[in-house]
Length: 129
Image 1: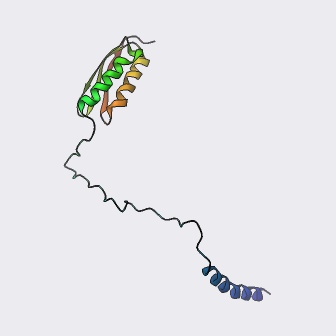
Image 2: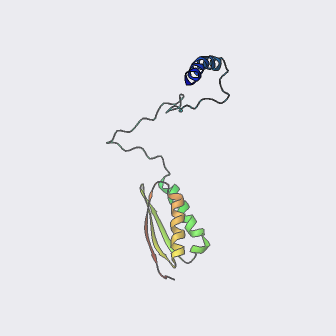
Image 3: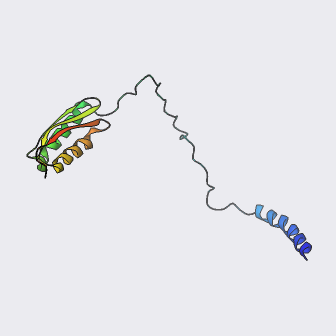
């Protein structure tokens, strides 16, 4: 009995495979890996290790002015005295605030305009609650 069943499976398998080959392809596209780089764009050139990439960020005044304006216009920082100095790599905050909340707010304002510059926090809290 097992031999008959095995023989029947052997006879039907090629017939089923032949029938499947005649069917149209499935409607969903096959899963493929996208190309590494879009065909219309070439990969970006890497800088040699001994050279620094050119900075494409904001200029010093374009960073310093909005930070200082943000600090000056914030009502919660009305009684504070926070100064800003910006160079090519750093945003340095100096001065005093009355509370940890004012300190955190001044840092958040600076971070929102600093771009890729590092924030150096030299703000002192005069009254801790």
